[in-house]
Image (cartoon, rainbow, N blue to C red; front, side, top):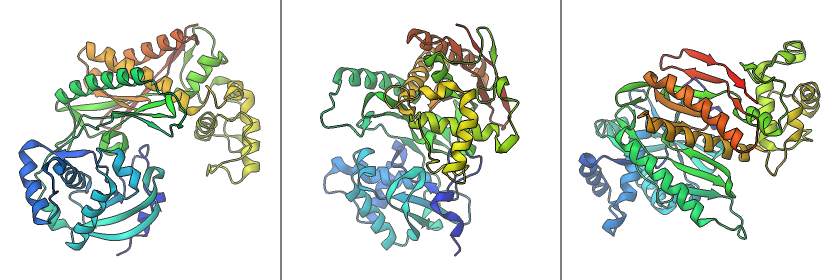
Length: 426
């Protein structure tokens, strides 16, 4: 069997239009109530029944997650399974011991066959992670099993927390309670993909509650082609995306922008002042976007290395590009690792998205977060566009920044897109 094309570095990111060559198993799913018996029978057949009944959910989660992740109706169903210890403990308190027992037993039974080991997994997941071929006959036995997302025991997670970092317990409880209200609402209007129900996300912060805060659920790691095939209440969905979210927020907070008050904003990455250099010396709009997002993400105003950006042959070409672009985006010189870097802008972004979701819920519009995007029913797109632009504008005003309504991109389920202009108001 030739699996050369399945190197992890080639697994498509969530922004690509293509399907993954291998599906990624996240322990996020449990069988719906009417299918628990079917899963429990298989657990017992494989001698994986836990000693204590209260731990039954662990194996149910592993089986349901594998069944959900494994591609259907394909010649070879291939799944990427991570085995890094911390990965399993952070989701559902499963623990790596249970995950390893599950994997080893299924390999012994011939249900899983390892076809490629890897040191680095999808999404930069470091540690033991391999590709497995799933037995088609076994998978066929569970084709009718329907699953739903399980609620994490810790809906708010703080990564890389320093030991001496003070933790705002009350604020964490408020964030968690706020999220619980969202989950309760989503359970009434699940995001469905092939009869599998997704209603759970958690918020992940970095070091403290002022950094990060994005929502992560099973839909956030799906390929875009699959995500655009999901439904809410049986209706097709669309994705409403903030164009250049970090750049727009940086301009608003630093109050450095070339857009005049009242001017419409169509594409922040390609303002009019830049048109005279576009196309020359390899300067393209896409390359500018990659450069700017990496620059803001790193928060280093004196950066002089490509840092792995494949768009640049070497550090010299990166510096040349940097020197050509910075005069047109002087706000980029203001980034820093305190309050003007990517992880802090994630906090602002997630605050805006949270506000919009609650605003739309009051209008009985269901919205799911996707980083700087919203997933809503196609019929609700106009309300979502209006709410997202207004929420960001007034959020920026409330933190003392310029009032800017962001430019948006709307993608419909048939792949068609529409650009929505933004505007500077102060």
